[in-house]
Image (tube, rainbow, N blue to C red; front, side):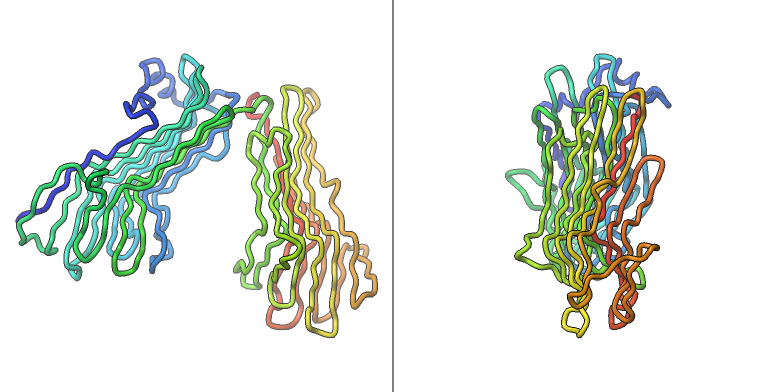
Length: 437
């Protein structure tokens, strides 16, 4: 039995020498210290997975196999892994022995790094019904974002041990060995009639405030369905500005969930707080008032906004998230119309060293509610009910140890085809943690 073998050496980093991935004995010793968590002044995140599928007909559970993540942390010494023995990434593509590791380090000379790595032992392409098959061995993707005495840096490195193509799918056709795999001179390896294999996308960025790196080792396009599968993904970020703690939070103007729990209109517009904050800047996302949004049939909103701001010093920190809706109409086209204006949900957090952390929802409000133009008032229970139309609940606040969240208006539709649908308007959530600082 003969095969067509492509031996690849697909690799890159921001510095082509790959020196950004080397560690000294002191660094290796520090990183290996089990259970050692060291606070730093940097916000780090890392994630990785074996496969990501785009387009075509794919299994519902196929995406992001062997997924692992470290959310926002300023602690060096974190280490998390996840492995998956086998997975069907898409029709005609399966993986074997995929593993993801994400970790953070601080070396003896003060270099702080966020790392992500995914490795896949092998990938099979095709089956007995396809005109050809292929096997890819030893796929690895590594991303690193770090800070040293010269500032922030980012690097990626990918590699593939070998790609073997069986042209007739039975091993009976003599093959040709081609070294190099996907390269600039030979960017696509074909599995005749089945797939095209090429190098995956890579991206790095660094400036005075932080760095990020992400890479996919390979990209496979299935010809019959236009499905694209990305193999071995890694992503790492690091940002400065953590001097007293870490923010968390998000905000959005609207979200609709049907009675069965299915989200029918996602969080719009949606904004997430950077864990180091925004350095005092106000960050906004908006849907223009001139473009009303139909949340569900019979519910139309105008002027959807989400904004945030957060800042910290060594002695204090403060931040907020805010979701806003200028106006929403419920019952469009019926003989009864509820209108609500000026919906604002705002969550605030404050920290003063020596005094602790406080959270509140000051600034949250609703300007007015009318039914067919007549003013309506919320009852002592914070509810307005209009039979066979809607129930309105205001100022729903949820507290946890670390966060506070407000949903300024919750609309539950009564009657009609959307009965039981819940629409949350003006939603904001924010929190702050010290993380050893």
